[in-house]
Length: 405
Image (cartoon, helix red, strand yellow):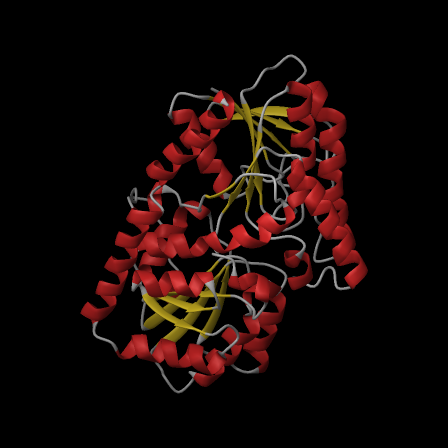
């Protein structure tokens, strides 16, 4: 089987699609990737890459075709929109020429925001006469509204029409959360939809010996680790407020590993509020994260109190479960339900700083054996529901079904 993966994001950016491409190839299938120039999350192109020109390279024997695009920039909505649009326009202009002499059996689109990156793939699918599979990571237009980039009803309605158009021009929709099925089906009533969750790299549950940097804040006390994007959606205000409430507990520390649009704000709050129990340590290579997570006493995931996030399962939940540490979930809906069902930790309402502080104290006061049991529960749940080998087999079956129809 010959698979073309289309994604605005790919290695050396750290996204789940990197490992999926490798997993498909490891099963003996041919894989190629059409992507842009890496610039996530900092908004500047990685060393060796520029906005202009078409480039070709290999990563783990996978051919990568890179098309011109504009960088995200730093925090500005206009630059972000231009970044999204440039990938779409560039894909429509250059992708047909890049693949002019190539044949594929299926086109697979990995679609965190923006969903519209599928448009060039749908055009290629039409040109080549092959099915297009779209893996939906975020619900649109609700995601655009929740992050504050689009607020006016007129623009939201217009976005909804574009989403309907986008969904209508694929052959199969895969959704990362079961709660996505209903809202997606309303906008794509004639397109098949299937639940297909995220997994994580093998290192999270079958770790290789990878030396991790020595982060002093993780070396002592009861450490609660937040890992990932430090942005608006992650409710940093709630973490800061919880840290304020916990200052009387000398052993409890909250450690943030990551970066994003709210990093500077968190750093300012640490100084302004004199928070000696909150540490902003910056971003670390993804391959070191399993080892760093295992050094923590508990792992924290937070989201803002938005209806869209009640449907979402942040990919870090799968990573946390796989690592085998207790999870503190400060969010609503599907993510909280999953942690509770797995008996892997404690869930509290989104943006509830008092509840978050209480949950941290509850875990802190538990015995080591009780916390270990939560970690084991989480890992067992991960193996049952999110095992990478199992999900790779499922994905290939979806492809084969479309090819043979």
